[in-house]
Image (cartoon, rainbow, N blue to C red; front, side, top):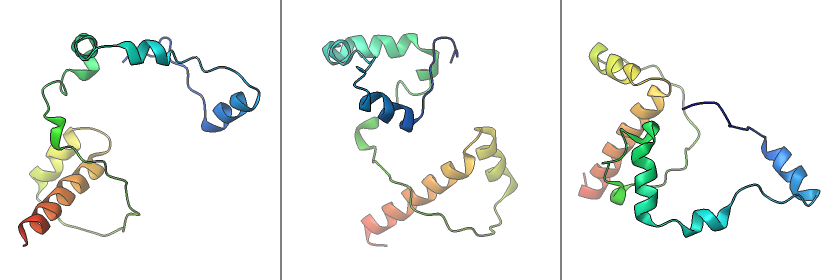
Length: 110
């Protein structure tokens, strides 16, 4: 993703702007007016979405992270290599895979 035109502000800066009565720069009306087809076309034109376009999101779940417990675990090298190759946050992805496994086992009554 290009950094051109990206502005970063903190939550505190947003709260301060609201206190001063500044209007949001987000064009919510324009976004709300977009059709599903227009959104999908924009996604297909965005290289950051290329690996996510054909994902079936219908079974996605919102997960609020719980406090983590630090442990030492031994995993096969190829498993660790696979997840590390996916980039930063690989431990979070390993956790997500394990969480999904646990949830499926509970669902099946196992």
